[in-house]
Length: 154
Image (cartoon, rainbow, N blue to C red):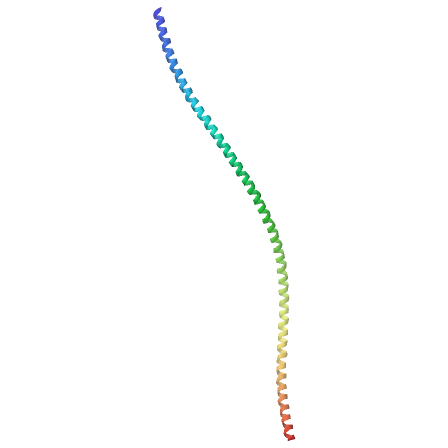
């Protein structure tokens, strides 16, 4: 029986040694997992910090975009006002252009009348030139008559 006990004791010792090795391996694995978990937790914390920083940066950018959008809305409103004013000026210029066209037509009529009057004055000038020629002839005749009268008197 003692042999049986020794055999059982040896089996138990071998089993304890084996289980002790397994426990050591499990402890190493658990240690490795714990280190990995710690690293993962640090990584998650770092990602959370980075996400918070990015969220703050995005919020600042959103505020800047909103401010820029408001400025652009103001500029757009100013352009709309200028556009309305330019359309008003355009309508006024169209009215002035139409008036100038009518005046141009009137000036064309006046120019035509002046051309006709100029033609009449040219005709009158021609008649006056002929009358002047006649008067020169009469003056020459009168000078001859005066000369003859003076000659008779002397």
